[in-house]
Length: 509
Picture (cartoon, rainbow, N blue to C red):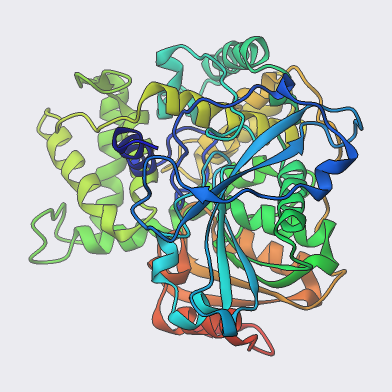
């Protein structure tokens, strides 16, 4: 991997909410890279016994300890003659052989994010006793370069985050969203190849079990973040006897009838949970980006500005779209509530827009990266569960959402491209249950815009006696070693390092 390629990876990671289908922001999106096509190899019974040839990572990884390899897995697990596809894998070995317990899989968010850099990135933040206990394992999920990649070949305008996220028209109409859904779904069917039909959370979990076997591990531990919590939950359900210590951080609602629809819907509650924190910050005396004298004034100020921009957008050269309209402001608000560190950018945009100006256009990742990430997210979300087709299924929900949650203007219940997806899911969604060992620890911030506490509680309930949950009195997406607090970090670290898990659910003030 060259220096310029690594730079593109980092720029991709920096883009909050790169598209509608990237629901987690904790792991960098993989860069575009050459990869064999799905038809370049044939599946065989030996796939489960694949060994990994660890080599120095291409381009010279910043961490000399990090090693890279390629795993072959079947594109279609239901077909014994399926062609093989590549899964790119990385690892940093345990730092103390005598203390080594096994492998810790770092499961990225998304769908559409990669953890290839995580063993050297977020892995450095892990306490020493955790780094001693595990080989840290990263991977690029199926479809995401440098694994065998997919691409929908969307028009540039359709890669705009505010278009891929299904923001209704200012009057609440969903007709434009359905037209976008039909256009983008058709492009994915035309350009995505056979692999896009085999992208799903269950298949990602099966890929991880092939990786477990190739590593020679009887069981694995995992740290899954955001969408990675659903991957980790599905793996724990499909392969319960192959799990060791499972940490799920910033947790998705596992409703098997909704899956990704529930995650999108969660944003309306997540924004309501977090916006008061932003409002208090934006009204604090001494804040150079202060918006109002009282926190109670920030919400009506924002709503009035969004309505004004609905009527009279401001040109924004270099952005996509090249205007600041109400929905672009709403999307920026949603992105900025992922972490308090992002609040200043939102406040500065609001201040500029109120004066009729805009800041410089935000940097965008290379289009090849956006195309790849979007395609992986689309294939996975639409492959996990069937979405309703037709406007009737969305109009009433959008109207109700707009009335109850004006900040999100109906977007979380609206139609994205899955509403026009031409393929039926290959299998029913996995139902998470309490069957299996009691070795799951959920960690969840109380105020999380992307994976709200209300959804995390549903995953906790689904796991039953298998899990306990640590709720952290903190704001932001990603709790452990990121936007949480010392109490929550300590509980998770103690579990990973020594197996100590709270006897009951815990609240970390």
